[in-house]
Length: 110
Image (cartoon, rainbow, N blue to C red; front, top):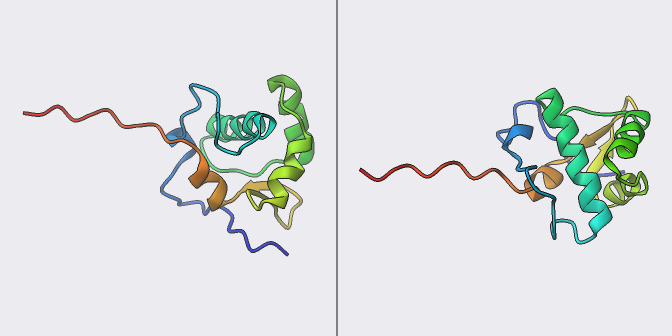
């Protein structure tokens, strides 16, 4: 049984806070994992919150994004994604905290 913590609904890092303007490189240590992780974040950004997805929903997005479904299990083994009691796959705190955040614009010095 996983001890990973699913991202709570009110978590301070929102999907929109993650920088998906460029590929994730060097974050998860495997290019295929980085493509899959990037896709997962973009799916959450589309919905506006850290939501859960079925295996079928992920498979469709993998096909569209060129990601490999194999990496779903890779993320699960590492407790970066977990399967909830409804059979949907959710991001964990470790996953979200691993993703690059958008840097807020610098405050002008007065």
